[in-house]
Image: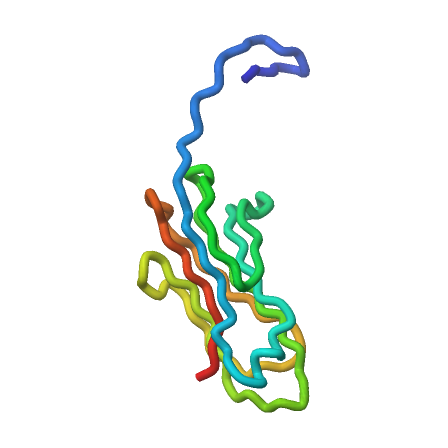
Length: 134
């Protein structure tokens, strides 16, 4: 690292280590039958805005990744294609370690829906994000 004063480097130092935590993630379209085809894209992003996502995966995906300790934001994005099939209400859910930390119920129409939540990053955090019909 270096320190700058009035545009001039005045000091050099070593960088401290960044604490990393593992995130185990899964994103799933749990809508069954004809309505499943209305999900054009389902995507999970884990980041710390305004930083670009460290995880940006579409359904169906599972995995594990190490992220810096400051990452604390999850976003589930649903791109719904309105077809002839009437589907009723949809529920978007984000779980952390088996507990629901965010959910949203809505009647879908063509377009994009978002579900955002801040979470506490602990060692081996499990994030499960999905959509389903009510």
